[in-house]
Image 1 (cartoon, helix red, strand yellow):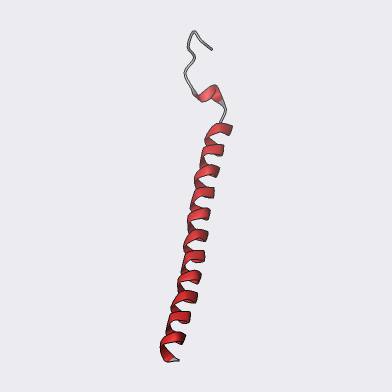
Image 2 (cartoon, one colour):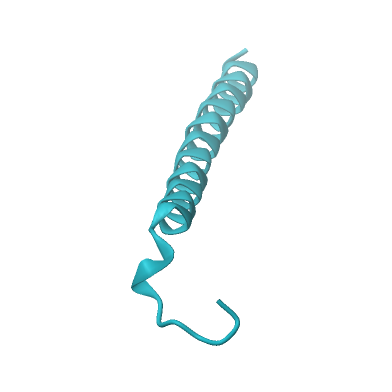
Length: 53
């Protein structure tokens, strides 16, 4: 019975750690996307003018 409880405890712990890790991963991806959006919103007047503009 003790071995079975240990296995269940480890399985639940692994599930919790997986959810926790996935949450941190998702938040870091969201921050990266927000940084890209901010770069895209910057006015293009900061870039030098070329003949193509």
